[in-house]
Amino acid sequence: MRIVLFGPPGAGKGTQAGLLSEKFNAAHISTGDILREAVAKGTEVGLKAKGYMDRGELVPDHVVIEIAKQKLAEVGKSGFILDGFPRTVPQAEALDKALEELNLPIDAVVSLDVPEEELVRRLSSRRVCAGCSKPAMVGAISTDTESICSACGGELVQRADDKPEAVRNRLRVYQEQTAPVMNYYRDRGLLVQVDATGTVEDVRDRVVDVLSK
Image (cartoon, rainbow, N blue to C red; front, side, top):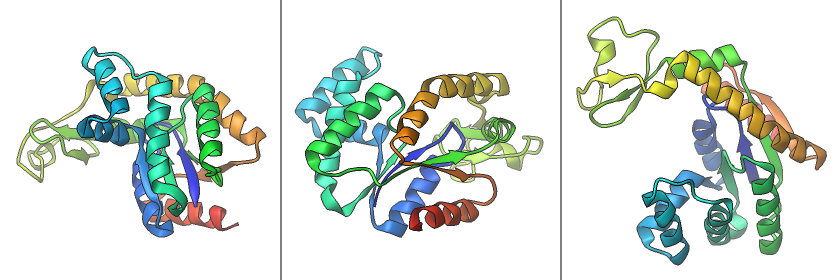
């Protein structure tokens, strides 16, 4: 199974990608993870990426695609779940070309659909430990136990980009950038949309159901 998992911030892409990876015995591929892996290994393309990252610049599409292509070639026929990539039409086109060269066409692009207000609620409820960076979800920090990390006892804090207004801005940017990508895959007959509200297990079952069809 070769899947692109698509969805806005807070839709649960990482969680669902992990579950689908186990279900279909496919590699979970996150662009952030493979960038860090390539840099850590000191590969030629990894060193290219490191140069941009060290200068505080975005890694260009052609470098990200090169790293992704190498990882996809390693995975081969065993399948993959691409988590949150591609994000633009040029990235989608470059990915298609790379997968064509590898003879690994995409089976489906799964869009996790969540109403904006629910996304704002989820993301603005998220906290991160100031000590160990472990994430946590809280309704409202109002007691001592809710503000303490369960792993290390550090203070749970809200990231600036998880505040409601920042979240709404992130969602606007997402819609502007990714609506064309959804249309790109819809036109190719690959896009399937899944209601991603409810429990993690409910969403997983819906995704598995649409993919089985």
